[in-house]
Length: 371
Image (cartoon, rainbow, N blue to C red; front, side):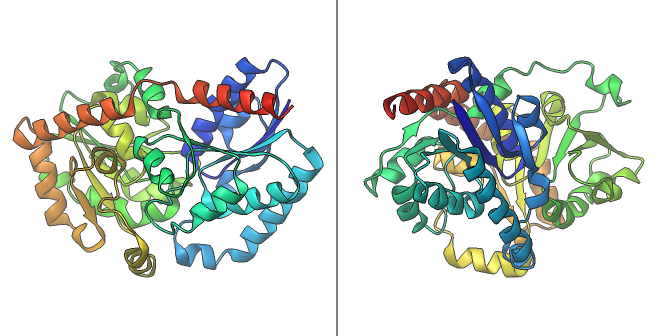
């Protein structure tokens, strides 16, 4: 069968690659085409457009690139119709993907959605579009199933793909030697995978280096971001920058400063105490404050339903607060123990399903019933 996938960011690209491999196990004749990144391409997908061309974040950034986004949307619609797949599989990225869902529905192409948009946080009206245009929704957060039930829409909870990917990573004992690091404890700095996140947060995160002379600060960089965005870290002798080694870094770290997003849950699953940070343009932040309907922004706290990790947002994200919170979690003490207890609760709630395999099986079975 022919499958068309769309992912619009790095994490979706990673999860999409695992889904492709699982689909190939279910369907030996699977043909896969779509939009994503290097992970999906290496898994066997015919890559049409790389997600880095569409990595816009925040209201202002989207508005200033609206013509570019429209041009890519038109291109995607044309390519989808030309390919005529048995199914369109969407991975998160709602601003783009919900438009593609409506288009595919209009042209009678079945739509499956893997990794639900975070409509429970804001713009809950999108659930009406999902009910209308999406044939099957595969959720990766346990509370999402209950959320959709409030709108009389059934979804499948397939487990969380991060449980699978993080659980396969052993402690990287060669990490220090490979990067010329001494015996001092490591503090991981995860400033995000988007340019805007790095611009707004990395400098302030690195302001703490002098306050923790007995620790090594290591920045987790990604190679789809131009190196100049990491220049503030690259030019410092007391900071190490590693590219595409976030998981090996986390296996060796005693604490972490983490941009809110997927990385906060990854850090928790590795059992690393963390401070969650978030800062964006004031326009984007003020607009979000008016519409966001959740008490927390980190996935760890949302899943636990409680404040397991501290969240420093916008104005609260400053040097004094950051230093205070990091000091409390970088050493063995009550704050660190409370976090680790919360992590165990999160792992229980997530369960042990292999999300990519479960999703591939359900998609394949759905298509079989469609004939």
